[in-house]
Each structure stands twice: as C-alpha cells, then as structure tokens.
Image (cartoon, rainbow, N blue to C red; front, top):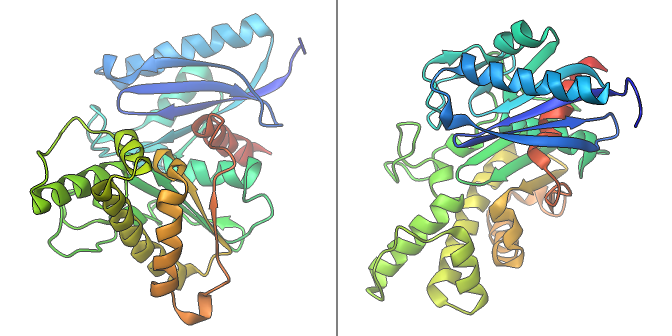
Length: 314
C-alpha cells in the first residue's frame, strides 16, 4: 500500500442511491461504496454520513484526500448547488458543495452528471485527443455535455448544453421539466418504452405494460419482435433529429454515446446512422464520428465526478 497517495473522492448522486469512489490521478478506482440517497430527508444528514465514511477510509489507508468532485442532476458548477432537481427529494436550491467543504475541509466541486461524464471522457476515455465533442447520456432521461475548442461549455449560468430539453415535438409527450415534447421523452430508456407501448396500442396487438424495461425490449428486438424493432428505429430517428441540430450549432468531431441505451449496439446505432445521413447538413456529412463510450464497462459516473475534481486542482 502506498502511504500518502493523493486521491480524490468522486460522488455520483442519484435519486435512489449515490455512489462514492476514491480515484487516483491515473483513473484507478481504489475503493467505492454506496449510500441510499432516499434514506436522507435532509441533505445535511446525507453529507455528514458520506463525509464520515470518506474520513474513515482515508485514515485507514493513509491516503491524502485532495478534493471532492460531485456529479448530480441539475448541478451548477458556479454555485456548487443542486437546483430544483425533479428526481431528488431535496427541493429548491441545495448548496451541497458548501456542505461538504464544511464537513471535510477540502475543496469540493459540483456539476451536473452529464458534464461530469464529458470531463471523464476527456480525461480517461474516447475524447482524450478531441477538442470538440458532445457526450450524450442515454439513461432514464437524456443528458449532454458539450466541449468546444477544448473547453466544457457551461454558459453564463452553468446550465448550457441541455440537449435533452430541446423540443422536438411541439405539444408532444409530457416531460418532467414541466414542458411537452422534449427530446428526452423520446430518445431515452423511458422514451423507448413509451414508444413501444404506443405502437402496441396503435397496432392493437397486445396490452400496454408498465413493467417493461429497456432490457426487456432489447431482448424482444434481438428475437425479431417487429414492434420492439420499430420502437428502436423510432428512438434512433428522434435521437438523430436532436444530434443533427446539435451538430449544426457546434460542429463537433465526435458524438460519444454513454449509458444503458447506448449498450444496445446495432439495434440503435444502425438506424441512427441511417437517419443522421438523412438529417445532417451536407457540409457535416462524413466529418462527425459516432462513438460509444470507452468507459461503459467501468464505473463511468465515479470517473466523471473524480475527473471534475482532478481537472479543477491540477
């Protein structure tokens, strides 16, 4: 064991569980643990429990904790706050970074989870040699992080790059943000399931199931289920619309797909390529690579959050 090894703690905050990992400069996850987010009605209690665990681990291993990085829904890099996150029980603006600084005494940085994923790709993954790229996280919703000219785009208020909340179908599906027709209601695991159920109703070929998962639909599509295949095709079409619009604005070298739905492979990627060829401006065709994250098989959320910390202090 290396004494006084410099580490950062990367924290990925989710609505149900949060994962904490200790990561060195080389991107090795030395240890990780999980805390139930929903068990803590007050964020202060949540912070105290995690801070105590971090302190205990670093003392036991004789590690030097250099900083804490946090990826969180609706995280704001400028204020260090989680702001009005619909999937968390902590309402309003929660100054989480400030709470961790008070408890641990170390520098703490917080951003939204998709931006953390983009930083992780830049430091450890597919984007090491790229200056212009977009990371798109395809999970329950659709998150995104934009790099332009080698810099992560935050905008004047810290909330730039919300591709998932661009409207692709006016007055379309209800979104958790309160509006209708956002891209993430169509191009996400949740959107895929909704599309499948709509197709089932339209074809009157079965009952709507609220219990289906994206994995179930992947298995159905792999077995040749025509409606599941159509659902993947429509999901890819909507994603292609969103990506085409983003490419027209930022002209990236690559789009890096990340998250559960990205692991569907050709079921998603083949129709996505077809629709991108249809929707992209001619000047961008053949210039933008579609990649699947190299971090998919590792704890990418932890690496992203830790990369945020290393990126700020190195």
